[in-house]
Image 1 (tube, helix red, strand yellow):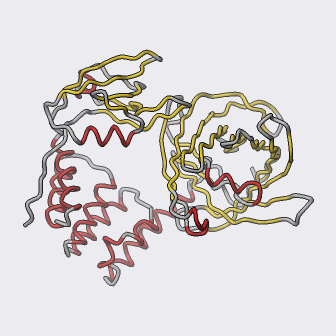
Image 2 (cartoon, rainbow, N blue to C red):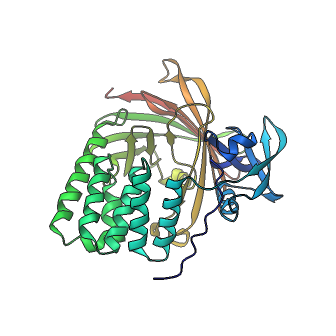
Image 3 (cartoon, rainbow, N blue to C red):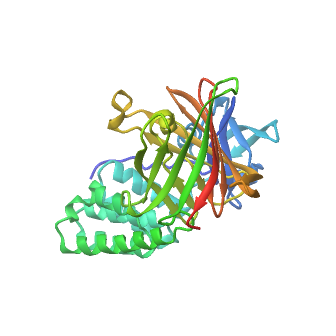
Length: 392
């Protein structure tokens, strides 16, 4: 057995994501666990951590890496922004709770290809308290790699019974390759497919045969209108890929024949996401944050995503783009244009070597994304306004 270091990092007891807004950067605290070192030190939800021991924190990744390099008992000085004021807070890290300790060690063992040890540690975590479906899924993967098919299938079934429906992820995960020729594999994928079907049927907005028509204005950096187009979204029967509802964008411009683009939408409880139109003058949208909203639907909710551009984009294939989102407020927006309705305002920023793209989406719980306001790196703007719907 390999001599693997299982040295544990110190425990803070706070959830965080990257904070990005104009020139302000850091890691924003999303949640603080009760009786944790973070709570005892006076750290609060909404605090933006900009430095730890004078090391600049520009993202959640920076924060995570720095914490991993510290042990229980270590004292750290946090510099945080709270209501635009800088505050210094002293935090003494503690030991990881028992369940998190086992999970951390299981991941280390997995990374060193000690799959039997990883599976055993995951099982200890499961026995020590409630775990997420993802931990059950990871346990199945470790058992599959360790050659224990019986336990691998057992934990896959438990994962699916907890509502796991990511069929594409299951089929493409190399950890389960050794299970593909087993008769139970067909049973497991069939059950996962049923969960996916249930999830797709729970769509509340993007239902087959519904249509959205948007008036689009293209503006230069001085806000002069240089072009107008209409683009229409229609939800189709079936799925685009196994995780997405099938839909199509239709481009209508007098100077060219109509163009149709098939695409996908996710409309799950707590998570709604769609591919924007990406042809012609809309090609830039694949570099900007896609229309997306996540629960809880409330001011201050922030999240981040990463997009890796695919091979279809030639020289740009493999480029990593970081997306940052924040729900900022509810705002009255004219819809269809009938009357003003309260919509959630979502601000998005993307960062890559292509520059910074900004977008503001307005989301209505019945009609979805009703207004899109893009700002390109050169300050040119593109605005889509919903002007007609059908099928509701």
